[in-house]
Image 1 (cartoon, rainbow, N blue to C red):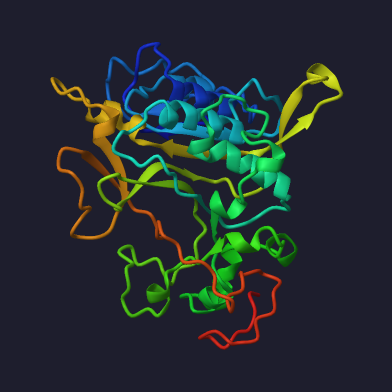
Image 2: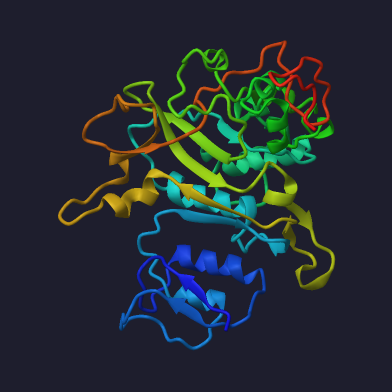
Length: 369
């Protein structure tokens, strides 16, 4: 007998929710259809599902997702017609439109900050693809639901540096990390992908200058000397009444910055999608998206009707907490980097596993491997 113990959320009636549908759609792409007996550690719970063999996706359907506030952002390999906005950066764009643009907060400045992109590997990108990605994920550009074309004519494209910031450690930061150069194996970027001219102005340090000296600095989560493998995409915002940084939306995910992970829009000339625009994805990835609107049901209790404008997301800053209007519900996020990342100086070089590192780390090594 192949039995698995499952613990989790309560069981539910047949009432599927978007989170559940997205999760099942993602799992179905693995084509794991084997049915098996699942052992439930719930004693004599009369609401437990039948002990009859069922598939993994059938099991997932048994649970209650009414308290899953996030939106799932999956990527699944294949060529997907872009009108099927279930995957990749097309799904992220749709979610930003529905969970950010349609829930305008009157207290937030209309001027949006660049999207912060932090990841552990970077694909072979083109400037054109990155412009399309920027148009998809920048909430100030998503007033239209056109999922295929850029929001700006090609000649009117704003500079990428005004729309995206890439948080990527310098060689110095890797050398000074807890593991030294060995820690750089967690960020397997190669020079041919990292050193492209259009990317250089976008780079920002993993730490602030004060953190990199390791003499304290503003580092409440003590992440400065640890090499990241997390992937986080964030759009900061600023309140009209103060310059306290807020988070308009945040995605914690397995997606690196690559066409393979997020997808690339192509013309399809064969098969059932012939003549249509398709989003071509090579990888399986999965992320969770949050914005103030996703937390509304969490704060909407009993007699209190909570408007989205009374919810804000802020980075965790330590014991003192954020300095915000007390009438707002605050969600603190343990963001491992600063919302005001420090741009590279002229002497900074982006880390790459195949780069030249002549200065030994604290272990006396001069390379990653």
